[in-house]
Amino acid sequence: MPWWAWLIFAVVALVALMFLAALRFRGRVRREFVAYLRGRRPKVEVGEVNATFGRFRLGADRDWTTLNFLDVYQAAAELRAITAADREPIYERALEVMERGSTVVGPEAGDVDELAILPRLVGADFFDGPPEKSRVPHVALGEVGLYVVFAAEGAVFVTREHQVRMHLSDGELLERALANLRGRSPELGKAVRRVVEGGEAGVIKHFDGHDAARVLLVPEHLREGEALVAAVPDRETLALARVPADGGYEGLAPMVMTTSDRRVYGGLLRVTAEGIEGQPRSGDGQ
Image 1 (cartoon, one colour):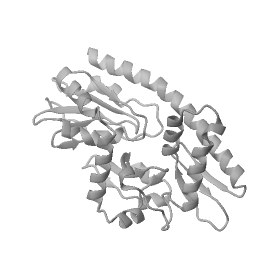
Image 2 (cartoon, one colour; image 1 turned 180 degrees about the vertical axis):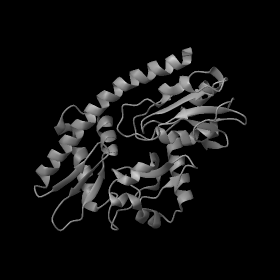
Image 3 (tube, helix red, strand yellow; image 1 turned 120 degrees about the vertical axis):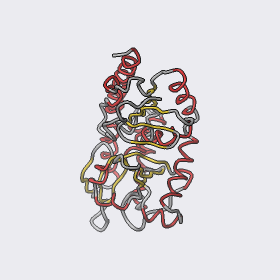
Image 4 (cartoon, helix red, strand yellow; image 1 turned 60 degrees about the vertical axis):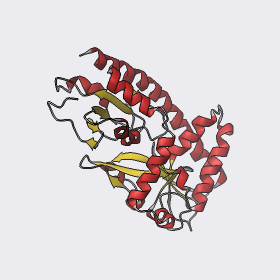
């Protein structure tokens, strides 16, 4: 493999070790939250609990709600707390969100702050989960088989009910989410230009659940005639590389490696100033 492919491989290996540590941390947070919830609401019913969401019913007279764990993880990581007791304020806020019905379920879902809405890139299997997810607004990313959904702070997915209250079309919702993500990605433009001009492969990771979605911002940092290969194997990864001059993509295979259970897309993407396409075509050049 060429040197830059080995570089990608080394970076991915290092990131994999970091991600394994993150997986252990997230597993501990889930167990702590369920224990906290059972302590605060002894009659709670616990349904499916996985790395992304948990299904809970707070009482026999309540509907099942789906809590998005990704924002709980982020809040816990930002707090840098050591013990479960230190993290209890986060679990209390998550419980308050569930009490209000502000999850991906229920027509009584609370309001969300437009400034907190961010995009998440998901595959079609995202909609294989709880039936409420069919009520999550989503925008297809061309013919790639990827979709943009929207999340807000407080472990909330934006629902159609939220969308109606905000009087935003799908396109306007996407524009708002991208504007917010742009504000949280101040170094992305520099990273893109390093790949284009210096030939360095780059892996972008903020571990905020929105790294894959940052590929949506890459076209605005490219000039006419420029192209990059991108990979979004999981939600926490955006890998970028120059298009191979010989059109051979075999050396870019490490870009789609992941140890995450939140997989997004197993192929490569071709990104230009005009937009994003699926698997690059053989013979493409910059």
